[in-house]
Length: 99
Image (cartoon, rainbow, N blue to C red; front, side, top):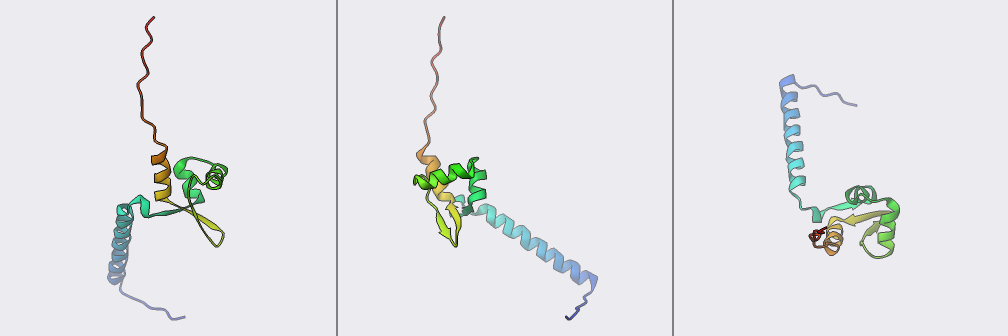
């Protein structure tokens, strides 16, 4: 194994550039529309605030589409958005009861 030494100011510049790249990529990921992301089971359950069993039921009933790669299941965020959009209910105002 070869050991490479560099001056401390060169090392600090390198670290700064890496930090800048990390910040850039975090910014780019935030800019990416949710619908272009794929979520695993854990992420999907956390997002919808449901159990793994409920998600399994959704998949079995064809409520949410998914992809399976080598036994790992992924749900597209656009499928989740579509499900939420299809189950949106209009809010209504309850009538006042006069006594």
